[in-house]
Image (cartoon, rainbow, N blue to C red; front, side, top):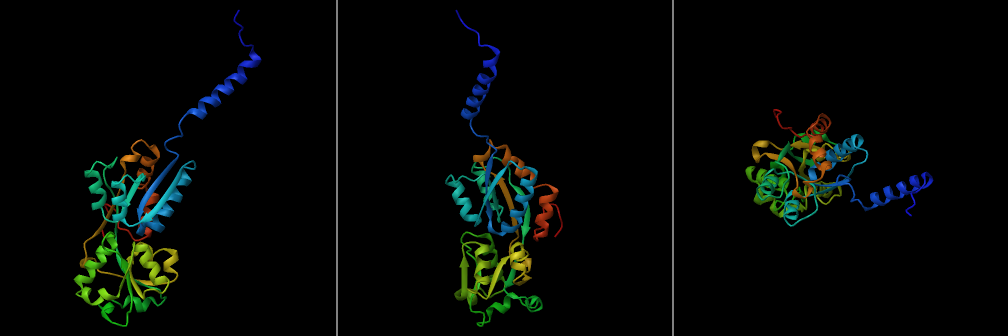
Length: 266
């Protein structure tokens, strides 16, 4: 004879079955996302992530900063990034063409390069131009490596346009990315640096240095964009973050760090 469980056993059995099912289910795909971001976004994107988590308290967002060119190569080789933010929109476009993206390229801003020095004498910096770098008294000049960093490429273009590239080349100190270039100036390993406006406007750098904008006519625009990678095609959290980047809070943060936003006049 089959015995039917009495009511006093039904609830505990149901609880055990529920726990077993929960333990065997895969983790939610949207628990965590990893962002690969150009170094010029170090402070701006950090703030955007804080705002995003405030609206999505269960989300975990890890951000890795570096050079756009290196991230591009790593994603082609299968690196586990969910969103890719590049200081040169050409890199994510190439990934879309290669079938390695789960979204179209989303422009998020145009960056600017500046001449930055670790001095509080803003008036002195304002009077400086790239031509001043030709003075041998400026022993070391920091910039990002133009082989893989868009800010380094634009810095080289500007120096060539100013007609001083060959004269300053022996005194250049190359950082792996634009943030490291700023660190060289901060630590005294270079007297001046060509860095991102977004970094110069950050609390960390603005309190310890001054800058002057480098004319945009001296280099190609730093049009920037991001994609959701193919790896994140099934991650709702990645899509949610992509939408958040187009929202009011994220756009306001990007503006505060000197980016010209899509759809806005320079």
